[in-house]
Length: 288
Ligand SMILES: NC(=O)c1ccc[n+]([C@@H]2O[C@H](COP(=O)([O-])OP(=O)(O)OC[C@H]3O[C@@H](n4cnc5c(N)ncnc54)[C@H](OP(=O)(O)O)[C@@H]3O)[C@@H](O)[C@H]2O)c1
Image (cartoon, rainbow, N blue to C red; front, side, top):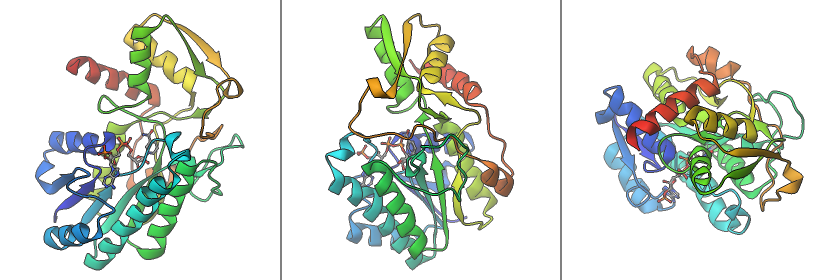
């Protein structure tokens, strides 16, 4: 197989992909690009890069991911999440590469408590979600050879995420309030990285939108409680309601995704979120 380019290679998911590629003895197939090495907004450099490397697959882990800050930086967020994604689709089309693009459960409004499948109507309620949806639509319009994976609540031993924030806050405080009335599914970025590599290896050409998270349902409170229990951290954890904790960007109240399509298409088994959290905390303990 030809080279695989990974944009956003130094972000959380990009680094998890590198870790998994290393473990699976596939690292030499990949080129992981930092923002400086592969700026998805720099069309001249992109053109040179695509024609020089002539990849078979391009994986886009690059994104503007600061959900609250996006409400004040709409233009920058739109440039990266919409225009940048469309740029990649354009060059993939030019050299006949497949684009694997990562999107989010935040494309949904999440106002009804039922499982969201790939056909469920989208209706983002914040700038980040809107720009991610525009990126998806732009890619689908330009390039048939795309696999868009919507995921949720990513965490891992690498990079910044909710799990790391909880552990840090627990070292600074004796008591913590965490949102109990938003439901979703935590996703171990290493599990997602393994799935992306499984999809590349299968090389099925089964294009379209897919949902991927770990199995199960949790609130942020449940997630935090599990982090503290597994890490044996003693802290008073208080459930709080969204109405008592206003944020700049609104979040979906319920964004649990149906994974039937990705599981059946690529014959995948998806781990339960708490089992993956145990593995992640074991990994974190090894490196800290
Ligand atoms: N994190 C979550 O909870 C979550 C949930 C659902 C979906 N997702 C999606 O999953 C994907 C991966 O997320 P993540 O957690 O790995 O995010 P992340 O850690 O914030 O990584 C994003 C990366 O994109 C890079 N980037 C920003 N602008 C760029 C540009 N113009 N050109 C090239 N690279 C650029 C950033 O580089 P710098 O570090 O140099 O700025 C960063 O390394 C994203 O598409 C995100 O929308 C994430």
